[in-house]
Length: 94
Image 1: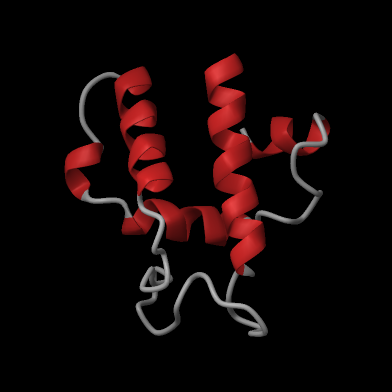
Image 2: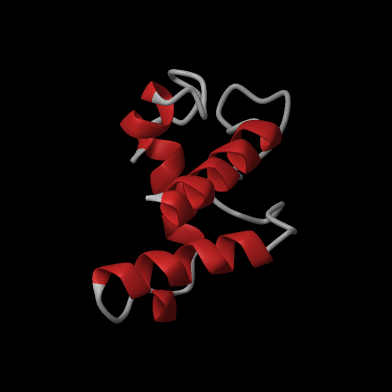
């Protein structure tokens, strides 16, 4: 999905490293990982879209916040939001 988002120009190349995407998924409640593939993806994107306060999202190491500006170890807030919105747009139009 990330490769298609980059190829289609919906996100910048390198703007969504895999470890940050992994971090997003890490913060999604376990209950969203059920059903068939389409139901699961929809549930994850719905939760990410509806969770507007992502300030407490943690990286998988639980040592750093996932989304913070001006930090070498965090995903800039705008980049994270852009990835979520672009992924939802891609999924809805797939």
